[in-house]
Image 1 (spheres, one colour):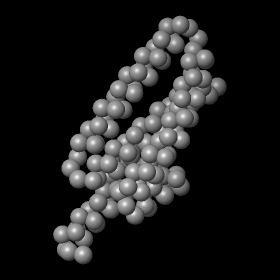
Image 2: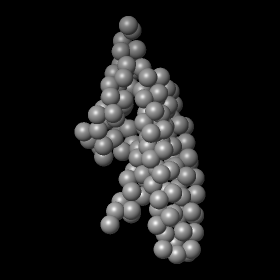
Image 3: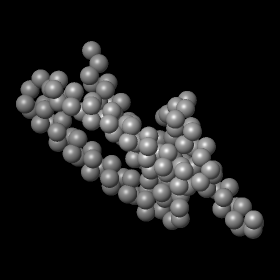
Length: 130
């Protein structure tokens, strides 16, 4: 391996381990840790996409429950608008990560989608707790 390639590989590894958006707020999550330990960009991205799919299903369940629990039509409408705005924001925010140079953009973007989806899910689930 050429010295430049070793440097780039090391830099990418550090970025993956320490610079993913929100990577500090899931400490101890074995599934996320497993994604960080994958060997290739494709494997890391696939792993985060799988986690995002899981959290997206859970998000949809929480969203539907929050809609049902809305005490008034105004609160229900506010949640519908908030969710639309959040989906747009998530797309734009993670698109910003996707605009990075090199293959790290794929990892950053997938990590962003995972983090934001998980965070929104947990937020909605908290609103459903008594």
